[in-house]
Length: 182
Image (cartoon, rainbow, N blue to C red; front, side, top):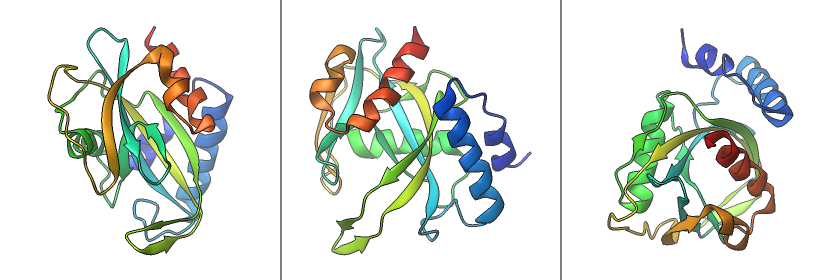
């Protein structure tokens, strides 16, 4: 079974995921290059929702492009082992080693990325077909800022996410994940 077939077997937990999975299916049918950024309309990304062992805090980075606290993650860039991408992104963006809580995604979402400048180049508005994994890390481990993308890293209490996250459209996704953990 290839990565697309495996992902399309994901069991949606709500209407948002049902509709987004249908969009993934459409993109997989019409765009052979969704694993890479070469597709300017929609491409695969992976995120990690990094929790502490007590399941009270999430590890987030202050994302310079979005000017908001957000989960870790990045582009698949041709890699179809999405869990490996998620774990690598956690380490690159925070300096923390994480381990999966489960092997399967905890969430999927289609996210709109507004046009922006990155590394001096304009990036047109596009869609991220995102796969999210629940991972755990030691909340006492030393944190490292990835200055190319982020300007801070912190453990944020679940009940304070709305204070830190300025991307209103992300709060329902974070809250969905937190609810699934309970």
